[in-house]
Image (cartoon, rainbow, N blue to C red; front, side):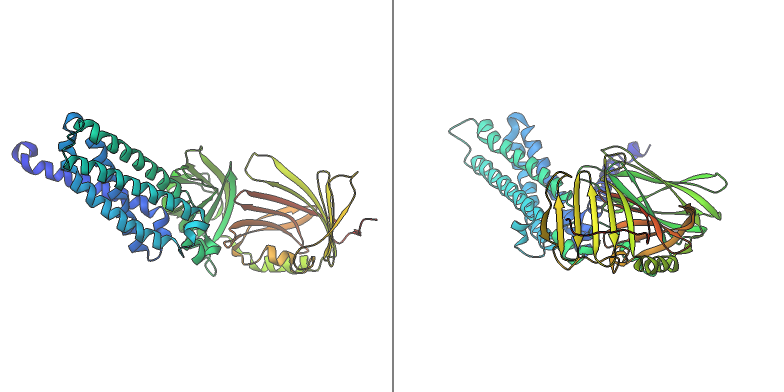
Length: 470
């Protein structure tokens, strides 16, 4: 009835809706990329959005002209003003985007992001040159050869250059951060800004791995009721396309609920929901990507007690150790191969490491290495400051912790142990420590990008001798 009564009004309304939907999609795309990390953010979002929209207009004009067949000249005449305006917008916003993304002109040649940006600019220049070529030929009426041939060849080249420019733009989007963002906040180059500012806020943060990805889940505040859920995914690559993020929560009574999570940056998803019951919750994160589904499951008690005093006790107790053995397994992804290493430490400055057949001994500023039990030892100098243990060793590893919480209890080697979880946002990495009733840590887990590390500590303060090879 509307279309019959107002045939002229229906089309503009539909066109307006389409324009709004396209504008919303463009803004959502740039907000999830590097524009959200640039300063000032509103200017960056506007510039990146105009740049993306103009690229779409220009590419559409090229394709429409090539599909016009014998009427290609007429099509070019109709679309050229739009393409020229789009090219001008791309040039202006491209220069602005480069200024927002790069800390100095030297980064155009000494950073991967800058080199890719230069290549994209070259592709843009080729597009402009080829566009000018068919414009001049059309103006000259192409008397020496058929119009279709005179115009189609540079137009096709222009389209090839456009495809190359779009591919390079996708490659730029795959960089974790543009150089200016890395220079202004190197400590939080790949982490949610909320997690970077967790110090002093009540929160619980735990992590697990799914294939090549590490997924950190943070609950604010860590007590029953309405909570904010923040998910940070590490290990994403260009083209992974993370989407459809959800958190599945199962209450202590077994009641399940699902919360949709919205994108909040590179690898960042957030949402709010209700975790109303007191007790241990099973929390799962589900995210679809082009490399397969991300699936992690974790458990968290609500409320979670503050664990800072337990961590400080552990730091003090481990700082008084005289000796220890440490067994380490290290992998880059869940379910992948693991490297096994065995360490021995003695205070104040000695360490021995066995990895397969290789051996290393470090004592202060001296180091000895051999590739197998049959090989001769080679002596070198330990780089940097002399090695020291346990002085500052554990405090440095566990330094700058946030969201320090008690997440469970377990018996390790006969010692009732408190499990403390915390985040180091400056790496970023998630830790879990099993702190015994004597304050000593006998088990440790660390989850960081391409760094899944598990430690078992034994022979704490037992007789261990480390001497230079004889």
